[in-house]
Each structure stands twice: as C-alpha cells, then as structure tokens.
Image 1 (cartoon, rainbow, N blue to C red):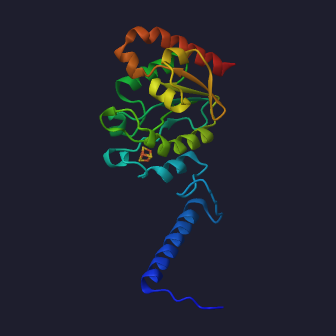
Image 2: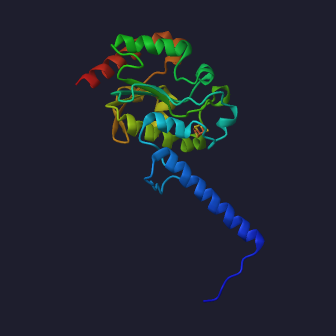
Image 3: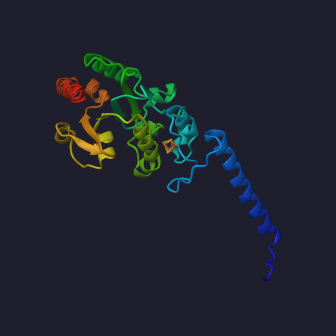
Length: 230
Ligand code: SF4
C-alpha cells in the first residue's frame, strides 16, 4: 500500500479536529456518564432527559443572533410533570431581565387566571415560550429564529409530557401550529402538536390592552380546566 504524505497545515488541521472530538467526548462523559449517545439529528451534544440538566445544556446557546442582545436566557418554569403546559411566543423585557417567563403585569394577570381554575404556575402547570431569548423591541420571532429554537421546545414538551398544551396569543398559536388563521377562528378548536392536544387562547398582555376580551378568555380557561379534569 502506498503511503500518503500530508503537509504541516493538513496535519495541524487533523490534530485540531481530533482535539475537538476528544473534547466533545469528554464533555459528553461529564454530562451523561460513560454511556455514549449518538444523535444523528443534532450537531450539538445530545439533549439530556432531565429537564434541569437539559436547561443547563442549552442555556448558553448561540444558535441565533438573539443571544447577542439577551440579558438572560428564559427556559421556562413550573412543575416538570405538569398536565398543563402554557406556551407563549418569546420573553418580553421583564422576562429577559429576570430570566423567568410571564412576569410583570401580564404574568400577574396570568397568575390570577390560573388561580381561578385552581392552579398556580408551580402546581401541575408549566410555562415557557417558543423562543428562549428576547427579540429586540419585542418584535415577532423570525422564521429562522423559530427553526433554530424549536428543537429545544420540542424536547421540553417531550420531557414534560403534558395532557394539554395551551398557546397564549396569535403569534404562539400560528408559529406552533403553522396556521394562518385568526385567533377568533382557532379558539374554539382542538389542534394537535407532536400528538399533544392544543387549545389556543389570548395572550395576557393582549387582555391587559383589551379588557373586553377577558370574558372570552375566561370561557377558554373553563374549557381548559374541564378538558384536563376529564
Ligand atoms: S433564541 Fe433559541 S436558538 Fe436563539 S440563541 Fe436563544 S436559545 Fe438559542
């Protein structure tokens, strides 16, 4: 067999690649023990099956430009075995500052609504957003940001394994369900995402701006309460 000689530059590149692979394997071992998981769909290390560890895995994500302007990564919070999973579109200014979902005035309203159906955000309920970092000026998430961040949400959903998903606001509903309908048209239906039933309702920030819709929101949350109870 003929020997193949490689140049210094090529050799350096090979050493660099080998070191990167070694570092990856060591990182994996640190996170997941001696078992090696191969996930052919992900270029980055595989996601943990523990919600807390998963958050640590991804909290320094730089997959899209939103990492440059975020103050805090906002993973989500609540009961990791919740039957009800509430999903908004993305963190706002206060969420970005505190690193928690749905805080500030709209968060307080959401807490009141949850209380009215005998829940709170830490009791059989989990709250998160599609994007984990705040888009500047609270603009809508771009398609590419959603594409990059959605695998995190999908894994989060699988780990929580809720009985029902509720999207808050039109942007969250249309982004998650890929529908181009009005919130009014979507509200009274049940959709499915990753085989999980989904009910669509208003974003609490919208209810603060348009209090006359609170009555409709209350109808939605009674339906949500009854759906989970059945
Ligand atoms: S929004 Fe999602 S994909 Fe973009 S940097 Fe944050 S965590 Fe990563």
